[in-house]
Image (tube, rainbow, N blue to C red; front, side, top):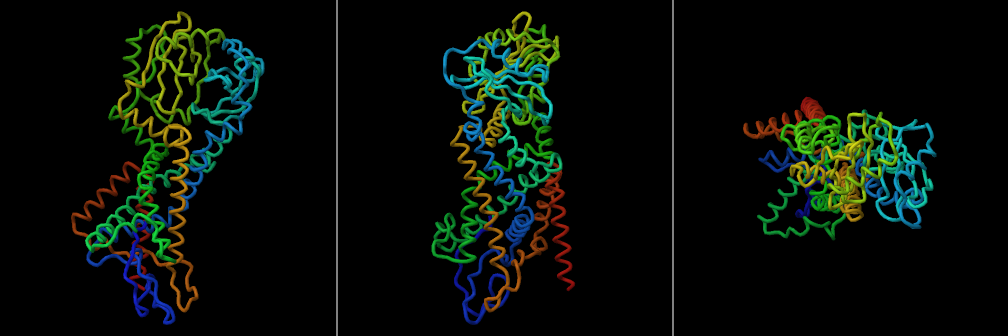
Length: 508
């Protein structure tokens, strides 16, 4: 987001924004604040230099992340259309016991997989998912058999991903958004995009605030800082679109950056460690058979860890149990859970991992209001051995849950998804505007292009900074490097490259 605005028209003999003399036959474009820093200052020129280089070098990553994110945001709704047969069934009567539905799925699967979970049909007209292990599945996927709850007819057989239950369309787009389909190596792209997006937006916001304050001091209107310049053309018009779009999207872009970092490979691990150190995690559901509810709840709070990760619903999957599963137990365990804290239709029932563990019933409703209560039930005695309630989670754990679900488009349904699409496409437009501005600032003479792109924002801002300014910049850089190592490493690379370029130009 580059700060732009109105400036007094320059005479034909003045230099244009690129530093080249203007043609005698046409007036030079009015100067814009993307070309030269204000005299005597250092902070605004530093922000401009950072904003420019980060936008140019990381822009492609941000553009790809924004476009794939916009596509992903709509997939929960698109799935309802693309996979209509698998997800829906005619309403033809009361639902059969889960035991009969599981038996029908078992017959379809045979010996090709192990039963790991069941998701009963949440509402009339939906299907039940009976989930198994299977061949040719990626990590986090299970094989889901979709069963008509009223007739036990098998209506589909598809791989599903994580607790989010993503079907193949959403899984493919999610993989592109997260790693470009390149695995862990590809995740570096999304970490760069998420972390640098926040830096670029904050730098642009700082430039915009400087222009707003300048306009106020001079008694000029500030309305044009919030909207595209209606009567401008060329570079000034593009710059006004870039700046005004950016300022309106600041909150949304910073939200996507902050929540996106929590998924990242290196920065995300530090976020998880920080949340654990500050007790910002949700309690883990105790599942050991033989514990009382009180003992189990205490043990769960003390053992808060992986299960409290709010991303578990995005990339986790049920673990296959080793104990024999009686299909009739699904009905009995669910009935017990309904008397404790399970009161929503969206639930997942998991058999015990071994003979010493309990069955678990977990609410998986990620739309508002959030319903993620869970209960553990001893399959032999039907006694409750543990429970967790979302209402009792620490506030920061709730905030993490809400942030992840909003980022994924689960919270608030279609309105949230449309807002995410608009924000992501706006971010993509800002990247494109930035590159167009760079091209429009290229040196020209007599109407003929002499370069493909314009000159970068001027260097040397830090040489004018006071000692305390340099100290703050270095301290901020070190903090960023420790907490977000990939961002810190790329920032050091940018600074070194910039220094090399400046020295080379000075000597030439």
